[in-house]
Length: 546
Ligand code: GLN
Image (tube, rainbow, N blue to C red; front, top):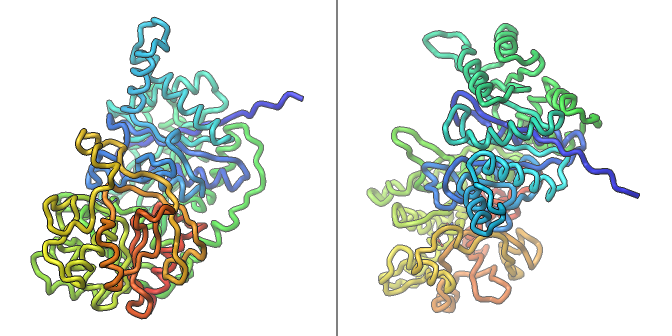
């Protein structure tokens, strides 16, 4: 029997007016509602940057670098897709302009174009299309969500839009366009204005694309008049103008979309036979959010918060979401504060404010700025029995602190910060040395999923309840094996190691010494999902509850 070929459908999500209005959450939420109708859904992010991956971008500028199982360093939206769809994606699901050009040039050098003149159009859009189709096939998806980074009208993403346009021409019934726009309510005007959305829709038209659905982001619900206005001037039917007001939690967005029957509209337009809706556990999870009453105060101590006069928390988005997931699961309402570690370097007295929180997280990071402040934070938490969770850099800091203040060694540091320190308790991974010498910085850290063996009768084992775990990594430095014995004798417990015993993956203080003092070389935050919270964050939250 010949197997019937699956008709794969594609939903392009593009942004209008301005960035930061929730295109990623819209794409993820559309994925979730289609999944709730029983379809297999995957997602792809296309980023207009020349950077081959997000690993070389500064988090203050671009937000968090999200790491996949296979080690790809990607945009934070990939984290949103994984969290909303509850799937693990891979490098095929992410592309940048740099990545696309790199493969076209490589193919050209390998004579794959058979002597043709290789041109920006059509070869770049064709490469984009082939990557989209490949990812969809790999995930065996009925529906593939493709989020186009940036905003329509930008120079940078025009080739991605061209690829989308070409796909629509080739498969008119299988491609759908969602325009996520912003509808402002200028305070002096006091009225909701649709003109920016009208312009965005026309700009999209000038790229040869007509939006099928318009998601109108705004502070408030769209009224009937504005809906009609947008429908009329942007050539969509009124049912396809979806009001997307600010909501208390991003996890309510899928259910909000369903208030307007968005999955039905989409499935109809894509000619997919709708199955019965089943939000199942997702609804349970959003109920937990609504029912959480008791507050838990968690502080994240970092340095990538400030951008001019504004405070941004995007660099730590997965950490924030992981804290939320585990808090909600435990019926708690998380109140998260961002603390800039540099202030403790100026005034140590300020460390006292840490007592106002139920738990402290020191997340991943690079370089020297603010590190001394973070080391003070680790010391303060250890000495004052404040729950502490260190993530990657936060683990290295805990080890430096212990060597300085418990072992009482002088001139202790990480080789990353002070190459000539007398005691480099954190040193470069042997395989990394050559890479740095060759200035091979891109995608070259210890990246992605690796196994860890967890020792029994430790806090870590209590959390995982199994011996072999797999977690995502992103680091160049590690605990220096020379000092392990000394540190252990002084009471620090290395409760998780790489299976060959060489790399220290988890460090902690025993339960009788501290309510919760645990740090990991890996990044558990990348694997926390609303429907499957992470054991380490669960343990941290439980032990932080007074
Ligand atoms: N800078 C440290 C290292 O490279 C920690 C990295 C991180 O926190 N992701 O090892």
